[in-house]
Length: 253
Image (cartoon, rainbow, N blue to C red; front, side):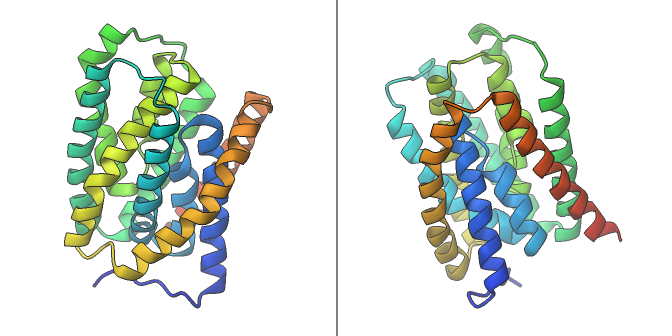
């Protein structure tokens, strides 16, 4: 049975709007982060399958927009193509996983991934990857990230950590990570449609959700250029920890 969502559910729609605003602020500030915020929020109100499906259209549009905006700051073209191609392959595999596994199991997986992301951000490893070293492992990392993105909508623990270790300048980082996210969304859409995950109602909701998301992007950009990164990270990580705990509690108790 395809996932169901109601346009008369005021609380659910409000939660999606808040999720998009928070995710848009984080993406505007860092170039990534819509799924890591929005999907746990939406999943807490509905379930993981609805959350991932709602996010796929806003993901595609917002990342295409950031690719265009930061098009003057490319990294190595061969590296970008590999990142996009293997991420797309992984996203296709992950979408099949999303369709076949129960929502309760996916919720627990997502909570575990959010916790892993929090721990990675707290640890802040000082590893530095050169472009030559990054090219040797980009296929494995981007495929893993794509599978995570397709299955639970969150690939940050794998790919954002990987790209952060390359110490790219902020504009180049945003351009590169946006290519990765856009390529995955382009594959997720037809596969989700095939499996009945991306229904007309959910696609419409995703388009509507892009409005608060797009409005929040410049706010995030302003914050990213002014707020202390340490304070901003602490606020986001605290929020994510609360969401992860709630997801685990709901599924286990």
